[in-house]
Length: 286
Image 1 (cartoon, helix red, strand yellow):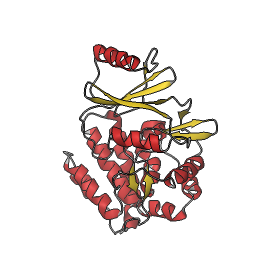
Image 2: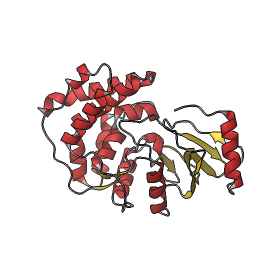
Image 3: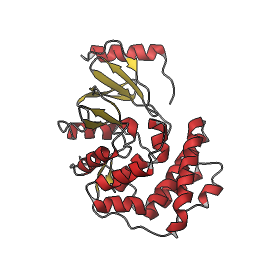
Image 4: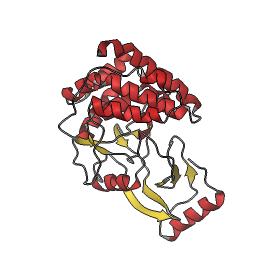
């Protein structure tokens, strides 16, 4: 993500003010790894970064706007205020949710994601990766973009898990930093890569040791993982998540390797966590 000049930022917020948005003293928010985000008064403003294609997480402003509009009033997403374009870059504005990134109670997250997955999706969302064959192909595509991929490629999981036939709305990136805890409930932000697909995808991303490290500072314990899977409303999806774990760990290890080779120092630690998790269960996938 390229830094913005002070002149661009001043012009951008002057433009937002000119179209009627109240954006006093904008302050950059940390945590996002894909876009420029500020808080200004009661609003959050996201300016979508250009370029930098990501092999795992899409960055689609149209999808995010469609989701926030479609799910408005559910309390599960922040209220959409306005969208637009400035000097060729898309932006989106939503009402600030006074919460904190999720830290504890995995059962709460599991029940919340179950409700999200039951929501009707807006039209036009792409199909997600579904089943072990598709996960394998996606992982191999990521590894093609890595320089030192041979050792990880040799850890390819064995067996086959068929696609989930009951495709549902999935967030695509429900990591702790995108789950805001407030008033005894949760709100899910950063909807730039929603899909129609296998809910196990969301469960695996939340459980990912790498994503927990990046956004919460440490992986979940085995007890926290078990509580999460037991609390998810559909035991079939929880079972799929366990069955697909080798492929999910393999893919996330490939993604962390891809990021690490591009200068992400902490991504090496995340890579090691995912590789170790894969190696701990791989013998059972034969």
